[in-house]
Length: 174
Image (cartoon, rainbow, N blue to C red; front, top):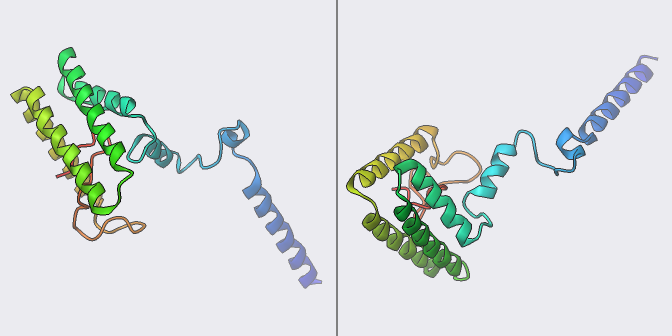
């Protein structure tokens, strides 16, 4: 008799577990798709970060807005930065069709051209502020342990992945 009661209780517990796993969350019930909840932050990062499907114009607008907010760019500077960022995004997009070392070389060349041209657009105070912001971001990444070989195979020890870029501006993370 005890075995029958335990078997019924076990079956009931399993059925409740399966039912709980298949119930739709509120976001799924509204048709917003799966994967929301504890991974929502990561989904946002994928949409807006590296590898996103933004057009070169959208990427350029994002970079210009970020630098305007961070550095207090004038309207003229913002337009120049937008044009530079668009050119860089177009070159990087064109390099995606390439493979291996050639692709990496093209991306790095586009990034170096952007940095050199940006240096001509910014004032001395803005350059100093930008270097400070980049140094703070680097310190935050190191404090968070990114690139230390933890996680799902990301990073290789303490070495920085060559060609790694900041999500917001595409700046190299040196």
